[in-house]
View 1: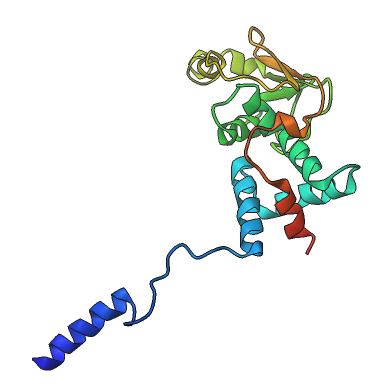
View 2 (view 1 turned 45 degrees about the horizontal axis):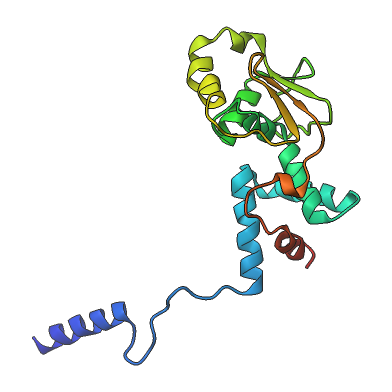
Length: 190
């Protein structure tokens, strides 16, 4: 009987930690941990995998200007993000799905790659076959178009035609998300 109570007491000590030891509470992140967390946050915001993200980072470092700002500009210029920003989809994931299914046109041509980079003066619109789907338009597109979410200044939305034009490339001040891009640059620079 004594052995059982000792085992029970020991089991309770294991759950609490050994006597005299402190419990682990919110371990402080290292510099690397903070950088990694920031990168993971940005990947999650834009719905990307590591390989895609790394490709965009490499593109950003090869471009003129700061790598961090270039990276954010490239991520914003992705077609799935542009469709989302133009309020033609409720989420970036939904925008990706709409694109993959061939429902989005860029300059009148069907584009089925969510990572397609739009350029200045490109026109992004929905395909004609989508314009005939009343339920989809009502439940997804029109619902979001009527919400008072502001379209970024680098895009121009035409609600009537359910399309948009890229006026210029996005700059850092256009991106409202709390992103510390310098941490991502530091992470990949190691």
